[in-house]
Figure 1 (cartoon, rainbow, N blue to C red):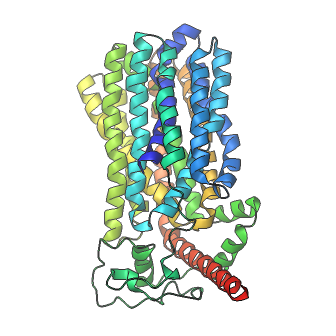
Figure 2: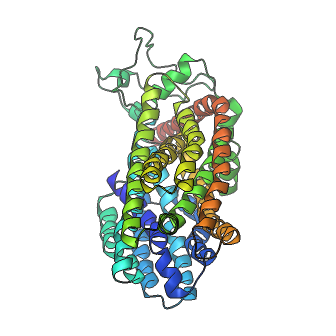
Figure 3: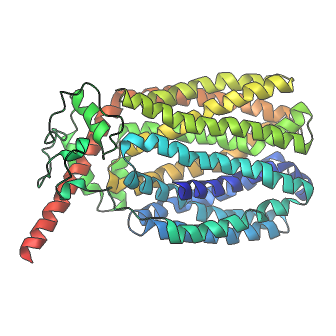
Length: 493
């Protein structure tokens, strides 16, 4: 978990660095808000093009080694960014950097889905996502401070040593879990271990009947919250509500693993997954704009020095960090109390409340009021992250998660690519190239899209339960097919 969080932290630190030294880059290279946005977007554009191939690799090769190699190449790209002598050269290095960072999304989603049970994925994703917030904080505070004191070049170079160290750690220490997670049904489980005392199955469950071969648990009014067995709590909630999977979707999931086009068609036919992808893309779009232009806005709107502006952004980062942690824990706690669609509800409410909170920091000229409400807004904005990520894993069969995540990474990269350019272009259109009025107005315009995304996410409450049941049944059928294949091979041997 810590290694995966560190991988996200490095990627986020790099993206935050552009925003942290944005004013220095504009003065040193003589560029506008729009060109600064293009620098932040260039890597994401390249990442979008490389995402699908990386998703295929994540489903077929050793994921730990793939991630380690990508981080090593990333370190070399950071060296080149700091050594760039012009805007064009720096832009080209950012393009090369983005192609490498496309690896992180599919690999991390695939590893999380196989290493952790659905019962705890919200919390785990929250902790891993906290690495992204920590990386943004490092980029703003450390890289931004070095950029102001020495040169913007050092803002990039300071990230090289931790990147090299992480590449070595990933290569040596990151485990490679079996795809589909552990298979406790292969051997008789130990008695007295809660839900793990179910008898071994030799045949896959009948489609549409979930996992009803395990002992009945009607004598227990509440599940043991410590029960972490694979699919245990989610299976129980699905069964209690009589939610049936879609048999045709189970067959489609089996066929989808044979090729990339088939896999993409399947994951894009899962209604809940599509709604989650739309919502996440809008959230990433807004976050990318905030990350790129927050320092520029704070310095211009509140009249702060670079050092004080960096500290103010650090306070917002603390709020964002708390939101990432709290969102996953809150959703998992509600899931434990029987709210099957808790992840959808928590994320949707957070996205609907966030635009209302951001209005005050954007309009007030009081630093104390703006910063105080801004911390709360940053917290609310990031509460949705972990529940959305965990919900996407819930509705996709385990053997398709790498390719499914490549679509999410593609949209994320596209949002990160478009947002800084759009924000910068709108800011230039609504104000001058070097004031905060245009940036403020651009933020206000984009808040409308964020609120609309929260409304879209509420629609997923209707399809989420059945999509979860179908994904569980598809995994059970695939596991049964694999066991039958092994038994047949053993018999032939």
